Image (cartoon, rainbow, N blue to C red; front, side, top):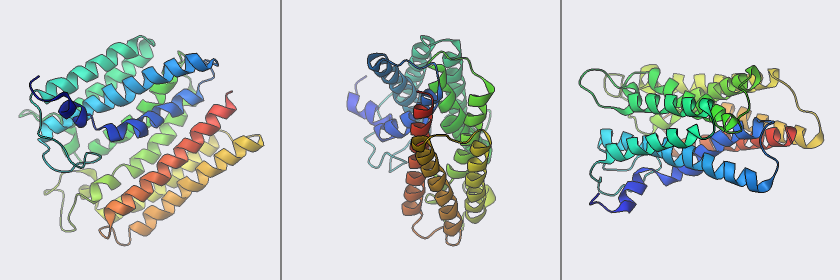
Length: 294
């Protein structure tokens, strides 16, 4: 590689590392089979960070940029350097490494990462034979929501070698409902009010920004209802963390509904605020799950 290593690293989008790690940490926290010794937990989490955030998501980001030929600001890469040569191969190599490392934690972990690589590659790959996933409205959001929700949570859980049961699958599905409602809001600031599906082929342009935000508000509420239906907390600490999660998720629902009244007024700032609420709410739920299974 003749381009500087720093250019390849930049296209992994390091600003995504911590948020994507916390997505998988939810599943890890939920597992009663996770180790109790601090040293073992540290090893687990370091490997999970490498697989989930650096190699799987980072590789997908690099491959996506190679296909989009990014030259200006993109999500969580405000100042991309000149695109290095063979960036697509670099991204796919990182994805392959993610599969290999995940396999050290069992078949389920390897299968989940393999499915994520296949979905993210289809999402980004420019081909003359088919339309890529990110240019098919609804399919684009399904891939994003599945990766941020079920895929990440199930990967974190599978890292503990705990058998995948219905409870964790349903929790993962409930968080996928929330990400399906929230992920499309990152498309709004990239659209113009006059854009239609023919101009920008994605979920938000297909439904319209107002409908996207109102549906998102309803899905945030459904997310809270689904998680609550799977069990309520017991104990003061668990109740406090659980209520903090629910309050912020419902606040995000209200924020999305209010945002729908003027979708194109300060959309980036509103998106950032909403993502902060959703990520903080999931972090609180992760704390609840960790405490409840300790």
